[in-house]
Image (cartoon, rainbow, N blue to C red; front, side, top):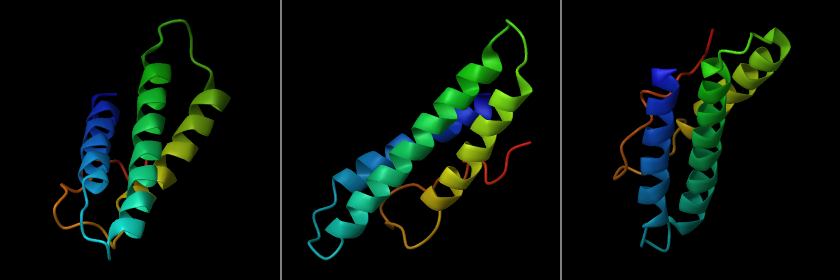
Length: 96
């Protein structure tokens, strides 16, 4: 769960950096990066919250969240990316 929260934080940092892009030639890519980074952050946060629940394990729900989270993080960390923003190296590319 800690890695998922860490990933969410890194993705939000990347989204903020992309939102601050001033180069007109990079604006379109920056908009896409903001969306991808926010998707990754949201899914990581939801996955961590579901895994943290102490009320019982629901395998189908857990697997559906994990299967949605991993590709979103992979898309968020795929080049071309901004060189100014920190990369989502802590974002899991595949989850158990």
